[in-house]
Amino acid sequence: MNLGPTELIIILVIVLLLFGSTRLPKLARSLGEASKEFKKGVRDRDTEEKQAEADPDKPVTMTQGELDAMLAERERRAREDTPPPPA
Image 1: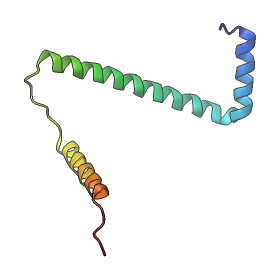
Image 2 (image 1 turned 60 degrees about the vertical axis):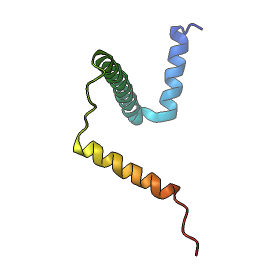
Image 3 (image 1 turned 30 degrees about the vertical axis):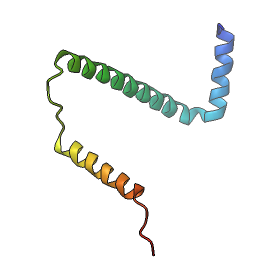
């Protein structure tokens, strides 16, 4: 399906009517930031996978903050999974 200039103008007018001229730049900015963050995440994951393949014996390291967050999440899930004591 090819979109010509007429179809693109119609779509732009509909989007402008739906979101208004003040919210449209904010919407475009947030979509751009989301796209940039997604691409960065994919690129970082690919880099990490290549590093892991290059040196499989290298130990996994994390910061103290990451460790604390992981342990807090594990404890939260354990509390959710534990049934309440009988009354």
